[in-house]
Length: 431
Ligand SMILES: Cc1cc2nc3c(=O)[nH]c(=O)nc-3n(C[C@H](O)[C@H](O)[C@H](O)COP(=O)(O)OP(=O)(O)OC[C@H]3O[C@@H](n4cnc5c(N)ncnc54)[C@H](O)[C@@H]3O)c2cc1C
Ligand SMILES: *[C@@H]1O[C@H](CO)[C@@H](O)[C@H](O)[C@H]1NC(C)=O
Ligand SMILES: *[C@@H]1O[C@H](CO)[C@@H](O)[C@H](O)[C@H]1NC(C)=O
Image (cartoon, rainbow, N blue to C red; front, side, top):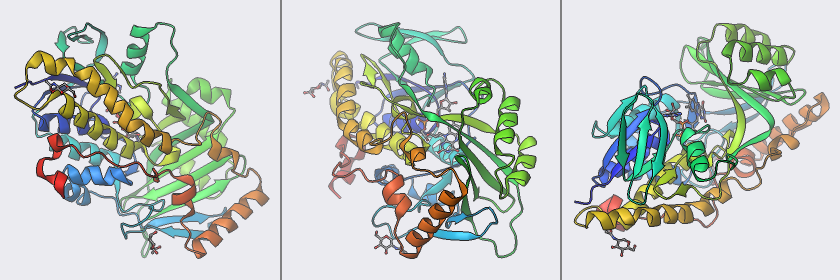
């Protein structure tokens, strides 16, 4: 059996999904995760379009449903809390989904269920990471931070937006090359949860509030005890740029400063922010690369093509990408019965084909999103503009127009279709 020895860096969504498929092909899979355990933090994520189809092909629909988040829809409110618009989830399974999908889940639950689906058949190395690697024509030699080393037929970086594998891959090749991390303007987002017991008759709704000066607050309820808070701003704050990724305490301070006069529930939220223990702040960004692999090293998920949270397509892209990467490996390197060295020589061909198949999908997802953050350019910053925006959203909701799903989020990938791999799916291909 031409079993490939594969190393995946990152046990997140993309890493676990890829491990699932490669195990199905019968390959030997090691996953290295920097965190001491499966990293199950993060707020609510969803699946759209082909992401749902891949989940079903994995046979995980039931597992997903049993853990899904109960959000019913999104309301738009003004500073007095008055509702201007309500966009319910469209559970018909037809057309583009609304902001709230039929496939909502907490990131940690999704990560855990994917991990469970690998059934302990992969070797997980927690609490360490790749220190460096080099490749020859026949193998990738990896040095781990814990001092051990090993060699693999294939290395895949699934280590997220700030991927170290990506940086090493690019710089091994050309020390002067620039990383594909592309910030979207100066937008930042902070995520955390706060306690807020559900009131009698209150539903599970997301609430979106636009404050002046390009500041946004969204809350989402996922549990009877707690809600999630999303603070988004387009900030010139130098302090924030400096504080980012250095110190959570300073990040919290800067967000408190920026949002203190934002109105609506800002005061209450900022008080709860002080004691939150799951605060997480990120600079909104895309990852753009001309090629997602070099030789026997490839990238998958956010590490390769993070489409930014604005598109609503990060998790879906990770699902679709992991499936296609595994599918091309199955197709080019065989599942069993082939001569080992020939299968290994086919890895580069598989990686190139993965890029060729997936790229038109990602091009659609990120179309119109660039370093200037197209979305923010259209957002009003003053009170009159905000009232007009709220009224416009109200009209759209009244007319039942799916304005967020159609115009803002990027679920629609036009005529791109999901490839079917008999190596992964067996008999499922025919139906
Ligand atoms: C802690 C966290 C919270 C998130 N919260 C949200 C959210 O609230 N909403 C949302 O839409 N998206 C969130 N995301 C991003 C979302 O998971 C991704 O956009 C999407 O699901 C694609 O997943 P991914 O597997 O490519 O990347 P990720 O889910 O980011 O997974 C990357 C994994 O790689 C690990 N890793 C990082 N660096 C290294 C390294 N050097 N060596 C080994 N392992 C490494 C990380 O610990 C993580 O487990 C979050 C991601 C993380 C890591
Ligand atoms: C859901 O979407 C479909 C397809 O776009 C549409 O026909 C249907 O009316 C929508 N349902 C609701 C409740 O908006
Ligand atoms: C390598 O790829 C070629 C072309 O896709 C295919 O004909 C050949 O069978 C593959 N070799 C193995 C060992 O899978």
